[in-house]
Amino acid sequence: MVSQAGSVLLVETVRRTGLDQAISAALAPWRKTRTVHNPGKILLDVALAVALGGDCLADVGMLRAEPAVFGPVASDPTVSRLIDTLAASGEKPLRAIRAARAETRQRDWQLADGKAPDAGRAVTVDLDGVLVIAHSDKEDAAPTWKRTYGHHPLMGFVDHGPGGTGEPVAALLRPGNAGSSTASDHITATQLALAQLPKKCRRGRQTLVRTDSAGGTHEFVAWLARRGRWLSYSVGMVITEQVHQHVMKVPASAWTAAVEADGEIRNGACAELTGDVLDGWPKGMRLIVRKERPRPGAQLRLTDADGMRLTCFATNTSGRPIAELELRHRLRARAEDRIRNARANGLRNLPLHRAAQKRIWLEIVQIALDLLAWMPMLALTGKAGCWESRRLRLRLFTTAGRLVTTGRRRILGLARYWPWTSHITTALERLALLPNPG
Image (cartoon, rainbow, N blue to C red; front, side, top):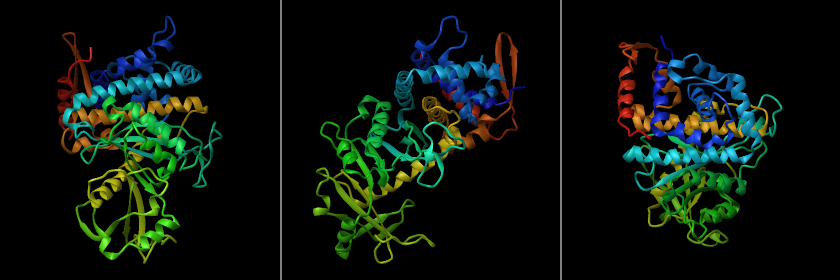
């Protein structure tokens, strides 16, 4: 009997995408002579354990208990020594791991074809910060703006749209007291995210960068709009006194309809601001404001007007209606779903003490999230392609099976009564049709 038999989906995804070969080649310089375990295999085993629900290095023991499914798995001391070795090498192993992920991502998007994030010739990258609580005095942990204690990483995710989930492309470790509107951190996170995309998506209007109001700074917006980069952006803005005064002067006839996420039309909800409120900002920037009734129980702010909640964002996209741009910006809320999913896969806490070790852990978390995004994109169909990690674990990965060896073959049998066995077998068939990476 084999537990976690459904996790062969992740094992096959690693093999068919060539991630195992890419990571092994990237970490080859850190493999000592006469060692038994490959550093790339060790790192992938930890990522698989995280994808299956683990939240520390020792959870790799779950894989070690099933060598027939996951192969030989290193011992806990070997895993810890590898993390220490990589952490002591500075930025080199991080760059190597990121390059391997970018190489594999480009191949995956080619295999996914019409389901790839760039299938519509447009790629959306969402940036958002996340607070990670620390329950002990770890390196770089500090008080946060929510009166907690821990870290404040800045994450980046590629949006798969309404028919998918999302995949991580940036994770910048920061102390808990890092500012939300720090332009240099947003620039660094965007650079990390762009490096993960195929070369054709690293510049040009087809790549959209979305942030909340934390990214609404002069330095960051000017960097996005710099000549030669030509990126599209949709950045939340703070309602300042100047913006508020301009909103009060907008005539009633200038307010246009807004489109809600469910397709409902709401009249008189959006308007575009012009004039001196755009002074000092990059040429071509559009400032769009939205007003709506606050939720029941929500308190109004000083910048709200006539009992209506005001929100504002900036974009450099021209030739498209205000309602369409406003809906596109509000879909940035999907980033909150990606963060919730990341918390369920290793980002609930940072289990290691030193900052260099935690950077390696963030790369492991991103590999786990990559696998949880690539496997549905390549193998699952219908609503199952939108399942998040907790549902995947409950319905697919935890499926038990029976491993039979006969005729020099290993056959994994799954229970017929399990409601989602057909999803597993169909997904394995789809993965088997993918070309072998070599």
